[in-house]
Length: 510
Image 1 (spheres, rainbow, N blue to C red):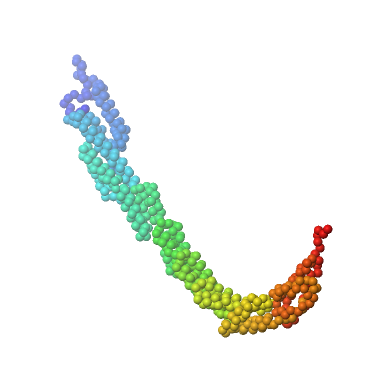
Image 2 (spheres, rainbow, N blue to C red):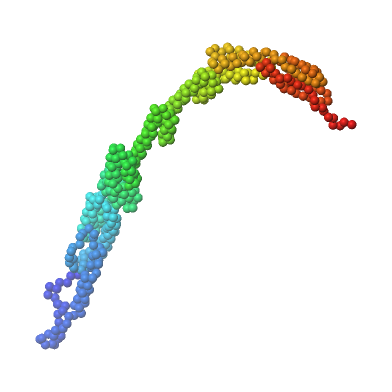
């Protein structure tokens, strides 16, 4: 219903609180209390006053627009009647209520997005666009106050769309902040890196990458300080201390590329210096002639740096030099043994040289000559040391050949010459017969090996060349005898007796 005004200033009609005069009364009217209608109207006004005092504030609090600051002192407004204004139809009022409801629904979405964006520090990354959206919302407030609900809805929706667009920018804001933060880290800008990682955390709370990045940014200044110290120590040649500082930097920020690179470079430089020092020790030993010590150092360097061409070549070079030195030493020894006619030692020296290099011509030729001379030396010495074997014709002829082989050697040394002279004397004496007296019992059949059957005799003299001989005696019924004797080179020989004297006893004699 429309609000009905009552004009109490119009006194032309009767007043509610006026008294009535009964017919037939006197000229002085009697005063009566207010009428029932007046009391009813006063009751309604009292209820309205109570509603203004107790109900209206809560309604205002609930629907007050968020973009208009509250006045410090709120005046109690006159109660607004919910009855339709004069001339407004119920349909129009329903349309207005629906428009107001729509505005409130858009406003609720707007407020929700505002709260979410403020929790994501929107003012740090979209201040102008955020304020533009708020301004559209304030314009909606103004329209709402004038009950232009359609306009308010349009303004609210524009603000809501703006905030929605800002929400859609959050992934890009995060991505850009992370990229800028990482670039700042790389550039050594700790302040910018911290700010950008903080922003990334603001729009993506709890993000692990942003948290790790912020931690790195907070450690960047100490890391850079340690790296500067490390570089100064490195320049001063104190590599171990420099490495310690760089490792401390890596401990603070394991993802810092510069720190990792410096640790890697310092370790390489320290290893290079150690390798170079060991190689230098090896070359020093080599120059001093200590090839074994040099090889030991080069092998140590190779263990420090497996596959090192420098170390392998040094080892090869040293071994070649050592081999050459050993070959030369063996050659010198062999030549000295040849000169001294120590043929067995000469052969060993040549074999040692060939063990180092099997293709050494001097060693091959020297080994062949020394081997032949060693064989000749042994044959000559055997013939000299065992002259009694010369009684055998084959042995004698072989000794003669050996003798002439030695005589055909040019520039015979003292040893060979002495052996040839000794053998010549032995050979000459071996051809001079010596008379040997053999005795027997005249019943024993005597055979002298290398001479023949001598038969039975009591005594017989035979001429024998110096040497060893064997005489065998046989006699029926007696055990055979075997007598070995030697004819000396002194033209004398003891008598030799050959006789069977041990009778054989028959076992089954009857």
